[in-house]
Every structure is written in C-alpha cells, then in structure tokens.
Image (cartoon, rainbow, N blue to C red):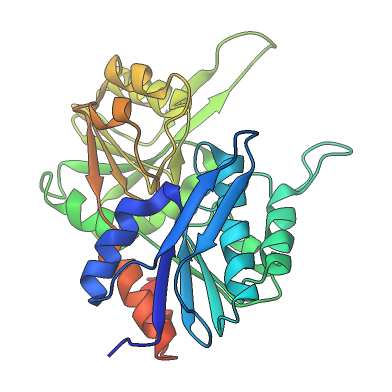
Amino acid sequence: MLERIRIFSGNANKGLSEKICERLGVRLGKAEVSTFSDGETMVEIDENVRGMDTFVFQSTCPPVNISLMELLIMIDALKRASADRITAVMPYYGYARQDRKVAPRAPITAKLVADILTAAGATRVLSVDLHAGQIQGFFNIPVDNLYAAPILIEYIKGLYSNDDLIIVSPDTGGVVRARAFAKRLGTSLAIVDKRRDTPNESQVMNIIGNVKGKRAVIVDDMIDTAGTMVQAASALREEGAVEVFACCTHAVLSGPAIDRIKSSDLKEVIVTDTVQLNEKAQSCKQITVLSIANLLSEAVKRIYYNESVSSLFI
C-alpha cells in the first residue's frame, strides 16, 4: 500500500521512527550514520530511493549541532540519489527560540536553520509545536506544524475531575497555549507573573488567579533547564495548590533539569517523545512519557497520499 515510501532516521529519533514504521507497516530505511575520527558526520544510504517519497526523522536535540548536521547530510544524500520528495520530519525544531532579534547585532538563527534545510534539498518540513508559529514563514516550502495538545489533554483528563484542576501558564508569553488547554478541559486559568526587581536578585513570582485547594497543571511547549517550571511549582504550592503537575511537548531537560525536578514540588512531569530522553531522565520517576507516534504516522500517510493534514492541527 505504501510501496513508494521510504522512512529514514538519524540517531536522535531512532526509537520514535521505529514506532512510526510499525504503525505504517513499512520497514525503516537502510542508512548508516557514523562519524569520522575528526568528528565529521558521514551518511550512506544503502538502498535505492530514486523516485521515492522519502521522510527523514530527526529532532535537533542534544547534541544539537551534530543532530542538525546528520539531518542536513541525509537530506543531501537523498537529493543526490534522485528521491522524488524529501520531507524533513523534525518533531523538535532546534534553535526555534532564536526567532527574532532580541539585541543589536543578534542573529535570527531559526531563519538560518530554515534556509539551510531548504538549501540541503528538503521539499517539505513536518514539525510538532513550533516554539513560535511565525517560523513557518521563514520557509519557502510547505511546513506542517502539528500539535501534541490532544495527547496531553487526554492524559490530563484522567488525573482528577475538572473541578479539581486549574491550568497554569508559567509566564505571560504562554497564556494563549494555556488558555486553549483550559478551554478544552473546561477548567479555570492562572498565570505566573515573574519579575526581577533589581539586578542579581532572585525572581519574584506572583500568581494571577486562585489556585488554593486546586491541583495545578503548568503547561508549556518545552522544558529545558526546568528553572522556571520548578520556581513556578514552588510559588503555586505557597499559594495553596494541593498538588502541582507540569506538562510540555518537548522534554529537552538539559543541564541541572533532572536534579531540579527530583527536588521540586512537581508531583509529575508529563512529556512526549519528540526528544529522546537520556538515561538520567528515563530513570526519573516523576517523568511520564506519552508517544506522538500515532499523530506523526497519520501525518506521514496523509502527506504520502496528498491528503489534507489540517484536521491534525487541532
């Protein structure tokens, strides 16, 4: 049925790619991704892809630059092997936080990544929960930005009754996302207002909304070092929240993130598998991983058959 599809994977998303192949009833493409002794990335495509509809799975997660180079070189190899279409499937789009100039002479690296993906030969990009929706406008090729919200919301519904829950945005920038969660769950909304009154002093957290006696769920698109999330959880507990949960799509969890989570007021951290967790994160009992394999496999199938994927956006 999917005889002209080929799915390849870099080292960053091998497990997720295998799940998707299993759901689609196809095998993972034969490709060798290795490294020369000086650190250069080498890719060999070990099967015929001429005229094929190819999908390359790779999140730009740690080590970020190596993951990005693997993706670019695989795309270039497929282009030179005469693949018909090359879709870069980036469940986590790295460098997305650098999407605008925040200071004089600062780069817009999210746009740079878009340019080099296109130059490498990608004809389409498929991603999940871009940090900023306007990143789609950095490309001159089609970009599908899927959302993990339905998967996370379905899990949150099983925690406790809606009367017990309150959705919390960890900052003012995430209010739109948190409001969408609260609307789908039929719960109220709270916002963490953080500010630093003077340089070198700790941030003061103010909670906008009543969380007393509630089970608070902090919603964000990613957790990196977990500093903001842990501080927000502490502030919510001080304001009377019974329990505090956190959920996000991308579990980057770099630096001291796991140690912070283990010693925090967070009862559970709900994430998806857009980023492959390291061993330390996998051993953390507070972290629950939900798979987006069904979502991505459906998107891949619809792209292959030239069907609409718009119903997957909500």
